[in-house]
Image (cartoon, rainbow over all chains, first blue to last red; front, side, top):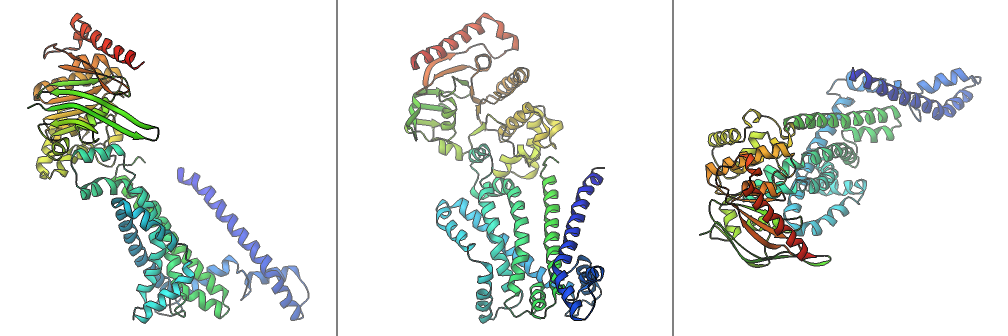
Length: 290
Length: 258
């Protein structure tokens, strides 16, 4: 019953977005299609032009069904071993994003743990962490990729490092707060037991911080995909969704670009979904009220 | 050797509005096995005194010994169990796991932890709730669980900071009876903070009346009602006489403060 009630607004919003997308495709492609027809000596015909905007090979904005076709063709109708397989490229990007997410989350939690245990670090380290995020990743990525390349590091690791660079920030900020979020009485309680710092961390600080951790993980997951894609751009478009984006724009293949964007969005949404499900599972184990 | 011995103890907080004297010239000795209540209006320093005994606050003057050593050493020896105003149960642990928390920290083996949790939960009549989460229990039951937790590692000294302050009168009466029985059976030393005169008289062997600004001891009232105290004892002339003296002490403290 509840699911059915929730389905209606979800479907309505989805339908509205698709309708908006179609309207945008018509509006943006109209002029190019109409001019093409005029050059070809065809008489102006609104219906024919409209149909043209829906099936134009190099549209400014492809129609949803064109993108869907392209995704289907490259993802499922192309062998996984082919360089044209969308799934292959998505997997290459996902690999880097997951590795980056793992590195970034580990680094974020470690830095946050250090900050809450050593007061001096709050003031000395935090400004650098914040400044690090003021550098556009687009500017930083080529430097890191080239620098690591001269050290002989190529492939997954440099991309994971760029992804981690974007991931660790939200995790550090959230966990610096989350690790201090335990009830002050509970902290006094641990003191009356003469609990060690490690015991306070594992039995009180960390469990109390989990809601903060999951909130930041969801932000970090989306950032990790962006980071991996950006990191794929400077390497001269070898592989991954970033490479598909770059190749698509070099060779004027808007459908290829849009298919790669859809794949990126699906990756982000899937990571988010897995994290949200994990969060629900953990919350249930920890006795949170439904 | 007294369980607690304070001499000319004082504590001054430095606040934005200047120094604030929370405790002034506290002289108090609590013998082993005593049940001593600290009573007074809010701001009289009764909770602060309890926290100084527990090494949760540092005094700025005078001397305090707990079992013959500094409060810090007593804390490291795990000499006392502390019950806070709120139950302070960890929400992600089931009741049994909350009770075993101090035992885990102290490194007791699992079977022993389980045995003790069971025994303590029996004692506070929560045996059937071991596998519930804290939010599934009422406020009174949560506070009983927190008492079971304080008792789990069998400290000789119990420090209780208005443990029943947030509960309704009927639950409170019941828990007072249970606490009295527990104290009689175990012979523990209890220091109990309250702002309820009947509660203090009903439970204590001595009542320390405190007054505010600065927090100091206005009167120490012996409370020799004997070990057997049914709830009805609260209507006896003896009980009322002691309650009257406590009330006068509280009033005098207020007049002094202006």
